[in-house]
Image (cartoon, rainbow, N blue to C red; front, side):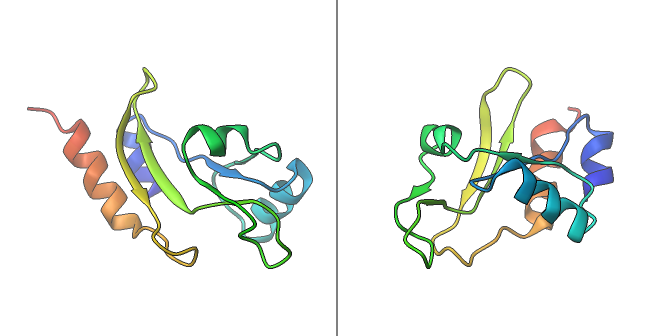
Length: 105
C-alpha cells in the first residue's frame, strides 16, 4: 500500500502518545517503513478530537485509532475514526480513497 500511495505523492505517518524512544522502538521492532511521531503532550491528538481520556489499562489518556487523508494544504479530505479502540482501518480502504481523491479526471 505504501508504495502505491507514494506514487500518488503521498506518505504514511503515524502519531502516538508514546515517547520518541518508544515510537522508535516500535518502528524498529516491526520494521515499519514509516515514522511514528511522538505526541506525548497529546496536543495534535486533541486538535483532531481523538483523545480517549483514561483509555489505557493504566488509566492514561490515549489516542483513538484513526486514519486521515490530508492534502498538501492541510485540508482533511477523508477520515476513519475507530468506534472501538481495537478497530483499525483496512489499508485497502485507505488506498481506494487515495485513488478516488487523487485520480486524474
